[in-house]
Image (spheres, rainbow, N blue to C red):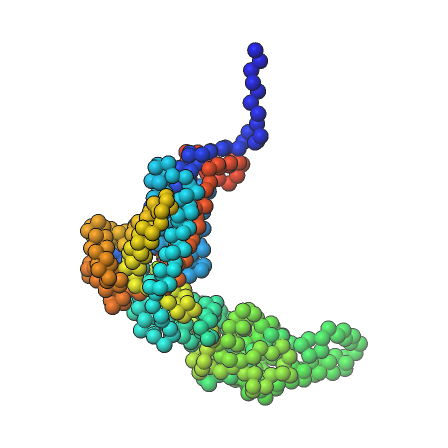
Length: 537
Ligand code: ADP
Ligand code: MG
């Protein structure tokens, strides 16, 4: 009898996991990712110290930073990291929440799988629940606008609670709300117009909002004034050199007399450049290209501050900050084109000089100067500022806020359970599991603060059953109370985005029943036994 030959349809190097194994493996990996960030959630969340391959250290509490630095390899786990990134780019905050929600949705789905409920029923139920949850969220959210700076500041302070920036959150809240109110344009906010610079020369409390721009350039010549008050600023994209007037002409010189004539002509042209600058009324010049030595010399003589080879992006920021227009041809430079600032000044720290343009009148581009003694601190401060900026930009655009501290999650969960009762069939079970996943947020907030999560959940639920929609677990007072009144406020968009992306990734993972991994791929431990996270498996 001849033995049957096995048939191979895949290269031998492909590792294949199928059915239940593939599913459980993916769920496990996703849960591990959620577990990894869980302890950082909320005001009493802990920080993580991450050390990369070359020994670089990051200490952070920020979900997306942690996951990005973890060098995760498992494909399903990588999908979880993607949610954090989407959350970060869409709303700038709420990354831990989104990842935890996805992890819990998958964990709860596993219970349903154990009951032999088919994944398609679970994913259908989850999608239904997510739609409903967003509908409820919309109904429950509260209007907020730019005029309510007090509310906006609470939003920032909530975002910063428990971060490294805790001690300076009042100050940061002022800076962020002022910065965004200043640069917004009919509710549109381009965060690219807020530059964050870091400086070690001072301590964090002195972090300041500069109504202007700081350029990493010193003045072209030491004889130029170091400081100009009442600055009138010319922004020039072309070079202030010979060729800027004449183009690429070739001159042949045959006699000493001709040489002299040529030199005089050159001198005249260069002087002419300086005269044009002067007659426009400019006392400060930022030039995107080079400035001839002779021009520099005469500019200095006239008391004009000039920087050369300023990057295009800086010239553009300067135009937005001080209201000037960028000219390419010097003939176009008139007083109309000049920008204005109270002071332009070169400030030297150790060996390097930078040009500070401050006191712009109605700046549409700003700088936040973060002071901190060490790089780890200033990096964490920058992340905190970015979270806060992201939150406020979101609120200004979306105009909707919700109570934080688990209040909104509990209310959504309660409403989803009500909705589940109206469903027949097995989707009802999935909707209920979705509702219970939402409760994981307040219960983790409580747990991370050393409170009993079950007690807290029970109290929260009973309050919400009695119509106290704004009750959450305030981690400062350890009380279940009206958290909106306590100023624990978040943008509604954080929550809707978290719900959308968590649902998306968990349903996607649930639908996978076959993992084909090429061994040559970048994820050698991607399937099978390894989870591929340092210290996790
Ligand atoms: P994320 O990455 O999801 O933003 P955070 O660590 O920033 O995670 O924690 C955010 C959570 O902390 C939100 O649910 C928010 O409502 C909650 N929170 C903020 N301040 C308080 C507070 N004083 N009491 C309880 N919860 C709070
Ligand atoms: Mg946050």
